[in-house]
Length: 117
Image (tube, rainbow, N blue to C red; front, side, top):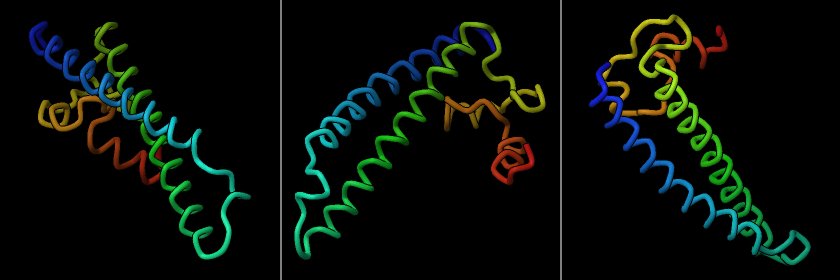
């Protein structure tokens, strides 16, 4: 992968990280300002608890994606970006363009999701 391509991925990842950081801060603020479970009464309790669960899940997903983006930026800096961490093969450019934070090629990702890795 050449320097121009790496710079393009670095910019894309940094832009995603900035956007994600803003969204994560907003979700965390909403969670922090939300009611405690004892504040809910009656029919609204189930709906509010479900909303809190969804907000918490979204915040957790944002934190995980932030970690993946930071890892991808580290891989750019150490020269391993675009190399699969599973098989050491090249991750296809189309996969990196679709999801620049990936660290596994598709076959290794499928093995990982199946619990084989």
